[in-house]
Image 1: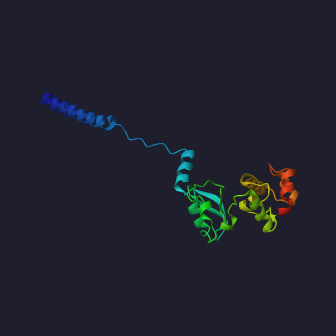
Image 2: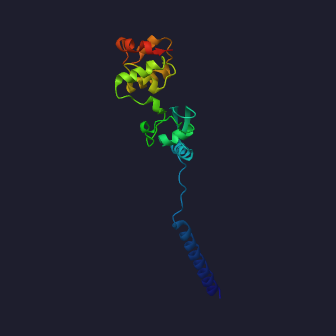
Image 3: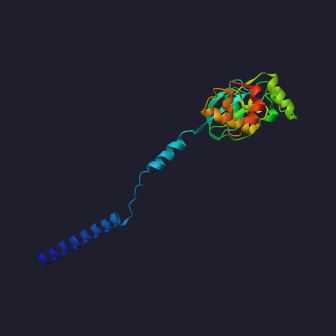
Length: 194
């Protein structure tokens, strides 16, 4: 009997060992799901940036109801920017506005009035500036500066860019703008004021 009992106990232990081995292989043999590493700071910043709507700042002037500086959604076009400024006035010259132009941060959107349309002859453009009185170089729009004798669109933009950093304290200060020397100043000095 002892022999038989020992065999049954031995067989039971053997069976128990097989079951435990099988369970252990099943548990440790399967690949464990790993948690992804936490996002890096740059990834967190990028995710936060994507979650918040991006905006750009543009300056809207000219024939609009409420000229000024506006924060608008990134990727906006001129047409959408004009809506922020209350839309165009009746005087706006739609033929001179590219409503489909995509805007960048720091852009200026200027809606010219029909009365500010370019004359075909340069002389009549210059007369318009003088006819309406001197142009204040500290507050003038791009179109008003462009109407000055000896000033075209590129120089008018340079004046605006310079004005963002400096204020003109005398009309002679306009010669600090790149591209305006004594000769150009002589052409415009009677048409400008501060």
